[in-house]
Length: 334
Ligand code: TYM
Image (cartoon, rainbow, N blue to C red):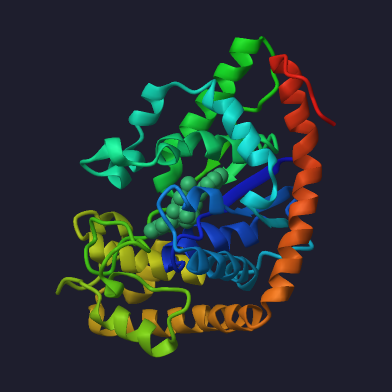
C-alpha cells in the first residue's frame, strides 16, 4: 500500500491556501487504500524565532485545523514532529548526505534569509534536509503539497538517491510529489502575482481559517479583480491572474472544474460572481472554523490525540531509522 506523508508548519494562522492546497486534500486521501501520516512540523517552525507561548498555542491550533478539515486521527496518524525524535536523528544523518550547495539553491531559503543570509539560522539553511527526514523516516512514497514545495521535494528525491548510491542500497524510495487539482497555488486576494500566505503583511490578502463569515465575505468583496465579464474557458483567463484565482478558488471549494464554474458564470461580471463565491466560501469554511473552535476549547484532548499519534508514528519510524543506521555503519541502540 502506498504511504502518504505531509506536513504543515505551525508558524502562523492557517489560510485558505493551506486548506485548499493541503488540508482538504489530506482528508480526501484517507482511506483510499493508502496509509496517511500527517505532521505538524514544529521543528521547521523554529528555524525562525517563535515566541514559545504562541508556538505552543499554534501547534494545538494546527492540530485542530487538521481535524476540523476532516483528518481523522483514527484513520490517519496525526502528530507533532518534535515528539518523535527520529525526525531530528534522521535529519542529522541527511545533513551528512546533502551538499551545502543544494541548500543555498533553495528559493525558500533565499526568500526567508533575505539579504543578510549569513545571519540566518543554520536550521533555516538545513530546513530541506529535515523535510527529507520527515518523509523518508516513514519511507513515504507520495507527498501531497502545494506548488511552492516542489523544489523541496526534488531535494528529498536527490537525498534519497544519493544515500542509495553512496551506500549501494535501495533503502529509500524516490518519493512522488502529489501536486494536483486547481488549488495548488492559491494567490493573494490583493495581488494575483503573489501566493496567498500567512506571512503577507496585509490581512486582506488572505482568508484565515479563523475568519468569521463577515470577514470572509468582506475580503472576497474587496478582492482585486478587473471589469471584464467572465469567459467560458479557463484558458481565456491566462492574462487575468486575479480573475483566474477567484474562479479556481470557487472550483476547489465546490469540487468542480473551472470549466463547469465558468459555464455557469460566463458573460457575467464580478458583481455577480463575488457574492456567489462569498456564499460558497462561508458555507464551506464556517463549519471548519466552528469545529476548530470546539477542538481548541479542549487543549488536553488535543494533547492526548497528539501523544497517541506520536506513539504510532514512532512505531513506524524507529525500525526504519535503525535500518538506516545499520546501512551507514552506526551501532543501533535498540
Ligand atoms: P507550509 O507550512 O508553508 O504549508 C503547508 C502546505 O500548504 C501548502 N500551501 C499552499 N497551497 C496552495 N496555495 C497556497 N497559497 C499555499 N500556501 C501553502 C503548502 O504547499 C504545503 O503543502 N516545508 C513545508 C512543511 C513540511 C512538509 C514536510 C511538507 C515540512 N516537512 C514534509 C510535506 C512533507 C511548509 O513549509 O509548508
